Image (tube, rainbow, N blue to C red; front, side):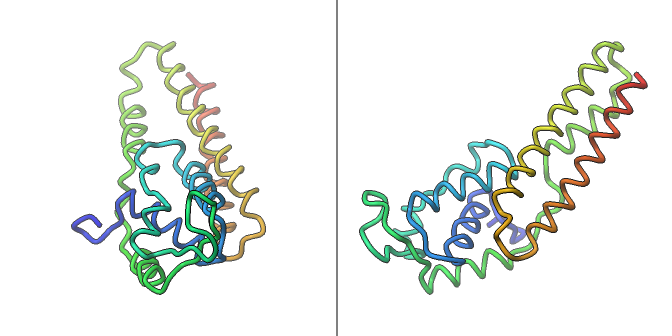
Length: 178
């Protein structure tokens, strides 16, 4: 954890893996694919989130093979008591204040957009539109994949999707005014 008791990207992936397996035992390959899918749809592809190995969780005693050995035979994995304690610790960690670098960069682009030539201004707004569309597509895809899962995730995704749709509409209106 960071010094302020907030999760590092690696711990966020660990939370995803442990929470997923706590819901129901699953095979090694299913768990790895589920974690990759979820984190990739929320943040997009990033090396920062690809570092946690399910095998490491098994080595640390947080998950265990219920049948088989592990990665080599795609064993069915379940969470251990230590894994449940770690999951609880991760779930109850503090949230880091909006630390998303892309939010800062977007604000800076908007702040200084007027310093660019009109065609460059339109190009930058188009980049922001493409970025928002990509994020929206990832969240819509994730929502479709999580439709059978309980909890508050679907409501939260619906809210975020609505915000992105609103941002896209605003950017497109803004672009027409340039």
